Length: 85
Image (cartoon, rainbow, N blue to C red; front, side):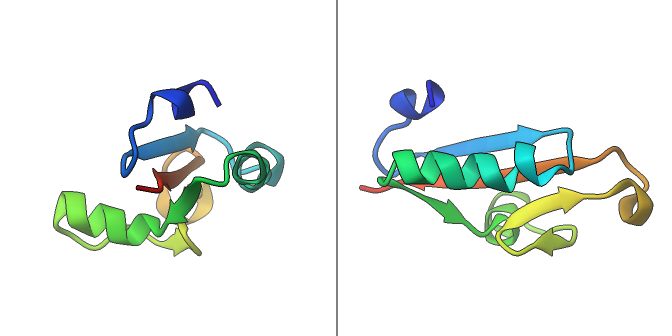
């Protein structure tokens, strides 16, 4: 919530955790969006392709989620939010 106040119109805000728990990930995003209607979720795969120039690792809907069992890494969740212009 604090970082949202520093995000310019048209700017992006990344929310990342080292967790796979919905209570720490999707629920936090849904609660934030309910409070901050000027933000919307961007598909992480699109942002990855735009910034990295390659295909993203598997994305779970609009979010990037790395799972230790599938990706041989720590658990990781990323949501990219954009503030309306």
